[in-house]
Image (tube, rainbow over all chains, first blue to last red; front, side, top):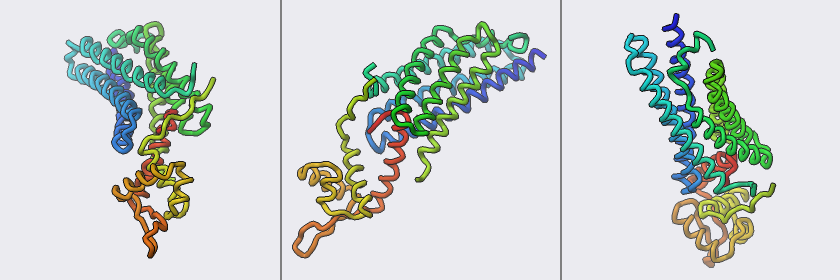
Amino acid sequence: MEKLALRLFFGFDAIMVFISAFIALSIGYYAGKAFKITSERLLLYLNLSFSILGVGLLTDGLTAVYAYTSIVLKHPSAIRLILMVGNWILSIAEIVAFSLLVYVYIKQSFLSVGGFVFAPLIFKAYNPIAEMILIFLLGYITIQALTNYSIRKETNSMLVFLGFILMLISHIFFFLTSIWALSYILAHTFQLAGFLSLLTMLIRVNKKE
Amino acid sequence: MTVKPSRYRSQIKIYYDILKVIWREGGRARPTKILYGANLSYDRLQKYIAQLKEKGFIVEYRDEEGKVVWYELTEKAYGFLEQFKRIQRFMDAFGFSI
């Protein structure tokens, strides 16, 4: 029963993170392609930000896959260390990526102003300090995205705002993971919804008029 | 809460503005239309027109006296306009502008 719970946990973790990584890398790729055409530096920052985020998520997803296969192969020796390293890489990648986004917004600102089932969480305790930094960074980005939406009133701007606010909520839930185990699932769900919102924007942007 | 004025126009944005004026005129436009539509001085327009011709975005047509009658968009220009519009929508979504 415990092994099944662990497998379910790491399977869920890996799938959610891989989908988010794919979306982040797609946005990063598109921004890079647009930078090649326009030589606009803001696009280069967007490319770097989402690519770093994507690589961080991918690393975290790979560590979850490693943990999953280790449990299946009954070889769980280094799981804790690998997960911790993967999680640190993701935290650092997210802080760097969102700091870059905050920098871009400042540069071109519009404003002058659980129970048994969740036992595996002990392996993957999210770093509360990193989460607090991320909540702060995402809070700033969300306010900028909201300001942009209130000015433009366009669906694409709304989707970007929605994407960032969902990511902000997800990191609030990640922060609460240590005191409320169920919040881990909610955090992943909100994170995925946030990335899906950004993916919808990317698809809409590339639709022929 | 105040909105900052837009930044200077980048070279690529000026290309886009010139090509958009010609596109709005149905794919071919007279120099004076472009001059006013793209909000450029005569000297700057001449500079950018020469660059656009060199890049294969526009073709120049002259009358018997050698005077420029109009500029016409090429297929390459239509492709560029479509790509640029998408990039602009992408940047607008984040609240950035080119």
